[in-house]
Length: 256
Ligand code: HPA
Image (cartoon, rainbow, N blue to C red; front, top):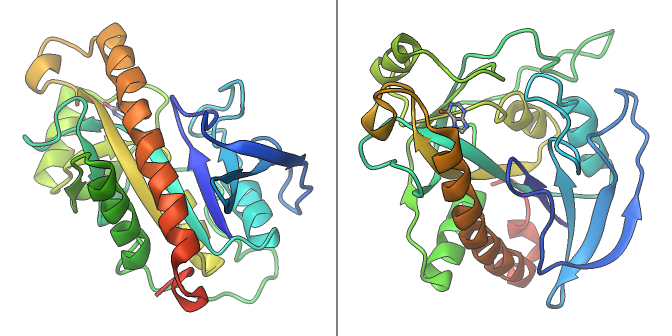
């Protein structure tokens, strides 16, 4: 089954016909909320709001382990995540949608693995942090929906919840980051530990600190307007992605 993890600006899917909700208990504590099961057209899927349905968990407070464990336990094979991000590369200005293919983890102090507390340790291969099949699925869905997305690029994942300094963004730029967000890690790594197919659709809602229209500071009201408009596009792409996923042969509905 396909799961969508909604981020900032996406706490529900308007086009989802809800069939039921399920509260899942996990060995890692409470997920961000109940799992919302439903259908888009004939296709089944499950939705989870990463920050909680009332957007109460900050990026460092999200129980990523409980979220991923709950989805894996429910029989999910693929997760399409949504992230509101800042744009660093010139082509990643406000309103641009992207499907990154790499990431750099700048977070700290998050519970980032299932392999602790006596679990036999397995070192996952994370050379390619996102599943190519899932990235292609999002890109195809975007094409079908007539909405441009930038394919590829490195997403830097910062600790938050504060936004970055100008110098931090310069460092990320020098490191090769095209985008900056706060929640893709440890989510992507935990999904890989559970052998789930995982990719993210990122919406740039502002130029990152010190760049472009944020040269004199990030204007949060402007960013919120971009977010609201952009999430309508995200919804359209996801609706098509859910349909396309359901049409795939079973062996292509998971990690490649
Ligand atoms: N930095 C980090 N995360 C973000 C940003 C940003 O500029 N915008 C939206 N999420």
